[in-house]
Image 1: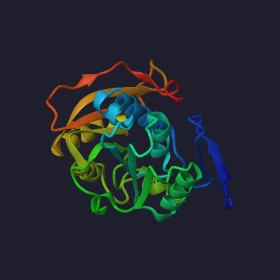
Image 2: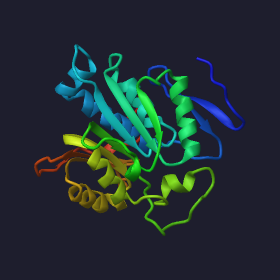
Image 3: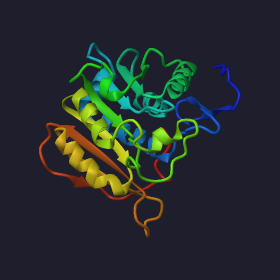
Image 4: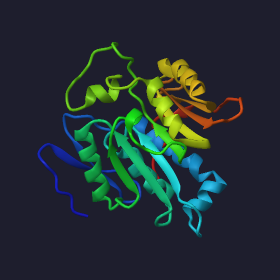
Length: 252
């Protein structure tokens, strides 16, 4: 592996299956939320007997995943390491609206020799051209600050990653839901103050919330994030799991 780094860039070891990612100082960089979401989705995909069998090959159809708002490409890259699919049995479309982030994500994909599995698509998720009802799973880490709220840092794509600059949470969930197969799963991470919005948007898009996990930095304090799984066309019944510690959910 030979990384050709440009000015201001660094190569970070993801501590997962020998994978690395290119990041640029002073621009948007992935956070704990993305790692949590990748782990959350991977554990549930691996726990599905049907999806696990398809990932293992044997003439079965490949598993198709789309990551909405991929940023640096961290979630698709981690999923490749965590799902351990046979060649040709996993395809991930990584959709990102910001050209500079698409370019960075694409280089990280190539660096890890994942070009046959991950395709970076520079597009608005609401106008992506991706085929509806064709994905087994969606991962979504939407901007957590509502449009018109909070102080913005407009440096290096940071504002678009944190604020609803291009699309709202509701719009992103609706577009992502349209890509899912019937009974496909959506995996979402966001901040607690957006929980009611997220649950309403999921149901409004025909995706029933089936599991909710609150994430804490300290169990004596309020949660800092939540993870949610929703099933398209699923029956009602939300399971709330035990809380999760943010610093105890890493590794491959």
